[in-house]
Amino acid sequence: MKFVDEYRNHKAVKALTRQIFSEVKNSWTIMEICGGQTHSILKYGIEELLPKNITLLHGPGCPVCVTPLEQIDKAVVIASRSNVIFTSFGDMLRVPGSENDLLSVKASGGDVRMVYSPLDAVKIAEENLNKKVVFFAVGFETTAPVNAMSVIEAKRRKLKNFSILCSHVLVPPAIQALLSSDDCNIQGFLAAGHVCTVMGYEEYIPLTQKFRTPIVVTGFEPVDILQGIFKCVKQLEIGKCEVENQYNRVVTKEGNISAKKIIREVFRVVDRKWRGIGTIPCSGFALSDAYTEFDAEKIFDVGNLIQNESSLCIAGEVLKGIKKPFQCSAFGKECKPESPLGAPMVSTEGACAAYFHYGKNKIMETNLSLN
Image (cartoon, rainbow, N blue to C red):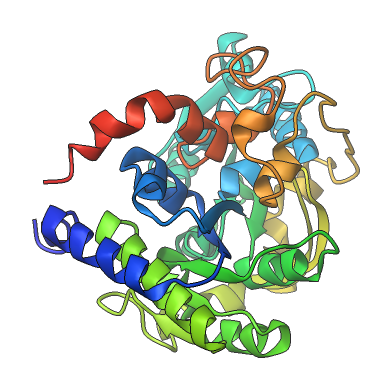
């Protein structure tokens, strides 16, 4: 398959590995910001291919993982209403709230539906005018355009029964928060290619200059990730701090102009709380004044819910790259995919789920899948 097979090619993987070994002279710590990259790294055993003096940290680039506890509780409260059809992507249904999750609401008789697009939720609203239809709008900048389009389309169709529970988060402010932390030991970043497909990478340039930290926009296949690591290490070894674009088959500097225009029309930038991390200034989207009539938090009056995290779960430390999932005392014991304490064990992009499914005992056999 074009743009997949050649990026899983074992000869290219071996060549890049040799290049990294020949380039690296010092010890470096690099964070891949995206959970999709984390899963590829664990699935293909990429860490095992690298020199021992390169450490990979797994960042907070999983929107399901960083959705705060109270946001899940808001979803549960809304979905439990008798006149509501609550719609969501499937990976949010099992994320635990303080007492319940959306799947439990569905099992108890709530009308909770998995959809593949927010536009599916708009269609459901049009077909059920006697019900209030809510879509759980979770994601980074990647999903913001289509979520914005659902609101625009609902307004165009004059649907008074459609709304979104907005929980969008933004990557550049998260990188700034990580680099500003007193316990930060990150020296380089692999940025999320799909986010930059929408937003471009101009926003990252000031970060590299302010923190003297290279950022490489990177894809998701083994060759992509190794190229990203190579480019990052090469900069670190010679003291450069720039934004590089490994994922240039998809990403441009300016991003998708039309998508960004839609985002600016429908959303405004706000402070946003991240699960296990806390509030990061200017790190999220909320509906703009022109579309506030579609804000589920206001419609259902759930804006003031506040909850504390489980004391057993170290999701915040995992998401900040301070600890690896296996360093959690609950990992694989109290916390498993079928009984998760935190979202990183649920999500298909969560670091804890990646370590659970692609643990050390599975890495070597997975390595063989590189064709």
